[in-house]
Length: 118
Length: 160
Image 1 (tube, chains in turn yellow, green):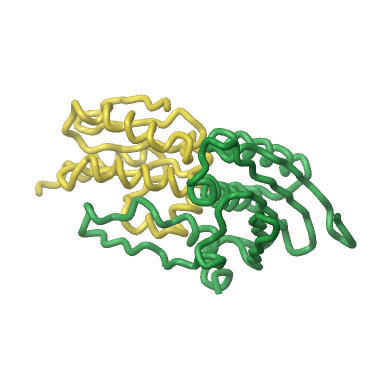
Image 2 (image 1 turned 180 degrees about the horizontal axis):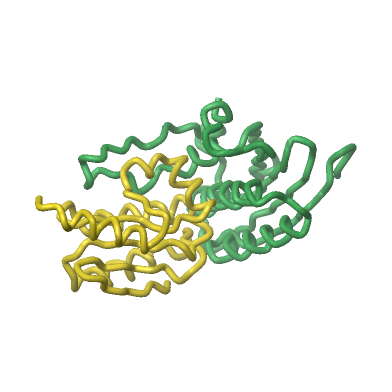
């Protein structure tokens, strides 16, 4: 499972380079995600622009990835293609994952948030 | 085996194993694209076939994972959409009936309890219709239709 890691200020951007997150790679996705975020403490944007298919096993892996980060870190999704968006909408996961048009929009939104004192 | 306005599009037989399911779905998508099937209906087909085939791999053949179980697939086009038929020689469905589970509940505030599974059948029920399950001669035959008009937001109507 090919994921690439880019740091942008306090944010980690993970881009999925494979076209499918399905039952055959769900565990590999989870393992790779864990490796990449383990050495970091920032919020994570997962760029799914190259992913044209997600099944329920892949969705389970996304949820597992979210749990790995814990409540102290945020996982936002970016670049949902039509079939991925369909599964996210059907399962109502769109109600619990922040979703952005693309990674740049997600990073810009995060930058905006960081300007506001908590 | 086709009649009237029905047109056989795809017939395949492949090992009940995740990698083979993926490879078959990619072939199916390319073939449906060649046949002029719309991107939306192709996306629904990918999702429905993935869920139905994964269910066969994980449940029907669970007890016999090393015995070379196979999955048979037929896709026929007719005026309402695509009719899918999947056959396997694994275990029968519990009580011999199609599962119809509820959507797993999601509580946004309770992260550890977010569901990581239980979506397969609700997704399949959400995008397909006209389900029919039979078992004869040790074979499960699951048939359903992916309607041409399937679109997000029509889930409730299709699910009933």
